[in-house]
Length: 168
Image (cartoon, rainbow, N blue to C red; front, side, top):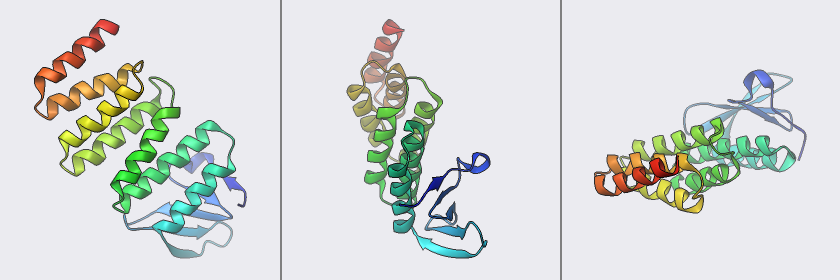
C-alpha cells in the first residue's frame, strides 16, 4: 500500500491513498480525485472500501485506524450493506475511549442508520448487545434505555435506566 495522508483541514470527510483523494458523493459512488492533477474518476464503493482498508492497515495510530473503520462503516451503509456496517461500528466502539466524542459519534451514527430503516427494535437490540459486551460503559446503557423506550418497551427501559442511575 502507498502512503496514506489524512489532510488536517479535510480529515473528517476525505482521505488520500496512493495519491488518490476519495470524496463521498452521491450515496452510491465515491469520487476519486488525483491529488496532483485534479482529474476526477468515479470509483465504485468496493474500491473505496479497499482504500479504507489500506488506510486502516497503513497507520499505526489507533485514532487513525478507528476513523478509517468508521469511514468504512459509512461507505457500507451507503452501499446498502447494513450488517457489515454495524459490525464495523461495533469495532469502532470497542476501541473508542469511554465517554469520548468518538464513542458518542459512533453511537449516534448507528442509531441514525437504524432509524432510517425504521427499525427501533433493531436499534434497541444492537445497542443492548454493545452494552452487554461493555458493561462498564454507561453511555451504552443510557442509549439502550432510550432505545427501549422508543421501541415501546418502557418497563425494560426503566430497569436499564435505574441501573444507570444506581451506577452513576
